[in-house]
Length: 445
Image (cartoon, rainbow, N blue to C red):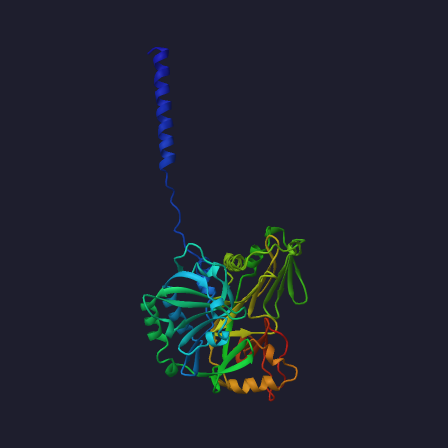
């Protein structure tokens, strides 16, 4: 064998080896241990909320034959939502100007209508992601109730109204009349048999509120609580968590990176976060503000068993509040244990205040059910108080007052006590009855 032939054989072997190794790398499939999803991973995935999960009606009002009925049942609200979220809307336009000759209140609360009421004004630019709107361009407006009127259902398409009660604005969209007839047959007819009667109370020239005619019986509730992972919150709020310093303070713990500060209040199970560098605001639209507030909580699985609902938004303050709801009723606590509040800065969150506990398992409660006074008694009580400007009252509602306690095994419990509340501006107050040992008149945002 001469030298040239030997070189050719060696070259062929090297080329063959190279091809084999390349093929082996491309086709190699390592054997991994079976992947087991941790409970934390599953929790994070299931805790992601979309717009329709967080922005929900708080009540449904039925008006007919001079009577009024109301429901706050989560089951009925969900059933009603499932219906109207399937409608196809078209021709959205403002009709407020055409209604100026009629008293606005009479239009909103007219006999033969259903009011679907939300906590605060909702930008249609965001809620159109929930509704099926065929229009390519939708006018910019906000609304806090959707109204369907029996008398306006005719022809092939009929009007459904979007109303901003505080701003006196009315917009309408057209929906297939057959769907509206089916809707009214399902929910409006017989509503007086299923729901308690409410009475109308004129607060001022621009506002009428509805309160139950008779005393209301609601169960007091007690819950064991569970806790959010403080580490997850720290990792979500600080850009470089490994550089965050932790210190013990009188209320609990503080975490800081030299700029941002997160305080853990272990007395009331609250987190308070602030980033002073974000104080200057760049104003987002109400739609963008609300969407990024929802996304922010999604990012660290912070909805706590999905019991929080959109409650209030201030575009001027760049502030959004979500509130804990239980069995269809809002909950309140003077320390902020039932609210998630965000204030946004120039690029990211400026301040973030929230509880770090969630309601776990409910216990049989002593002393339940509790009978609350009728709405008329609530109205009379508010009118009788010199320190309450009755004409400024914007809402009256039953809610739960949340307090914490320890059981015999020193396990933390929270008690939800049914209580009457009224709202002025964005602050809620306990209705102070004479037999109370002292009504809480501090503002509950």
